[in-house]
Image 1: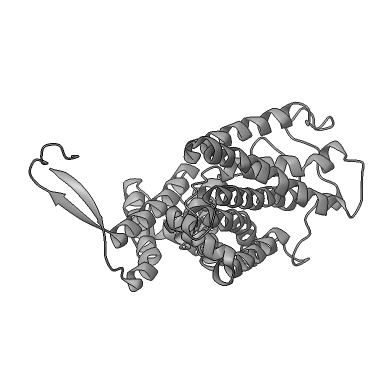
Image 2: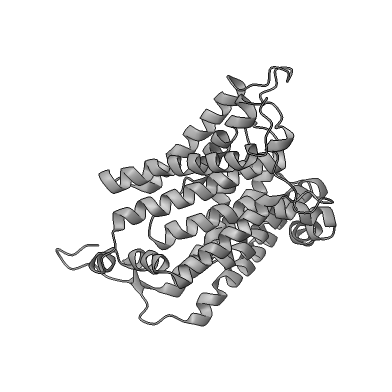
Length: 361
């Protein structure tokens, strides 16, 4: 007995559209069961996750702050996944972008100039792109599995950040706490509205989503990404280079992740610390697939996942759960999104009996 997956000849466009909503509904059902097993009130838990963060103006600003890195990273990842390049290391590119972008306000903290912030953003994008170029080079030249290399580089980046803020970049006036100097006024990302906390990182995310949407829908590059993602052989026949696409997708994804990193550090934190991300790079994978790898859909998905971050923090206080439950809740959403997509695109068959001699089981 064996299980076979057979690709469907015709796909239902209706179910393809409804897939994220079905996955979200299944996640809510699974969440109710999860909270019941934990001995918590599921109605109160779901209210804390999805409604409570929307009841105050200040929490809407926090929602924009949380959504900004998710949208920026996921937009870049959508180009990778649509071109069949599996970048799983956006978390590491996020960290390296924050590190490289923080050179000016930390090492040259005495330099105050309007040029500081633009240079920080540029350095961060270069740093993230350079770090993403490592798995891209290994795949294009050595045919190395990019899933493994990009993922392993995440832990290298985390250790590098931890060593940097505890060692050479530690604030000499910080009473031995593992953190850098506070960024100067010229190194802080300005707020979108002076009366709120939401900064221009959210604006960068919206701009990136709109630009990538236009590229995918209206340009030859977008067509090249789609063709190579569906069939590298067909793309080569059309004159496209799949190796060049590996570099393009990874460098673009890394640059946007680096921009997200410096936006988070400069806009929300104001300094480097041993931990600057609650896992944005990994959660952005959920955002990309929940948004159907469409930049505009990713904006909506990013807001939904940002809501679970804020709701998780509220639920920890109101019903007494840990942050591990929040991550499990987010993981369930990715599981159901991928499961729904698989059932839409493939027909599962249970084959009884023994395989013919010489055939693969």
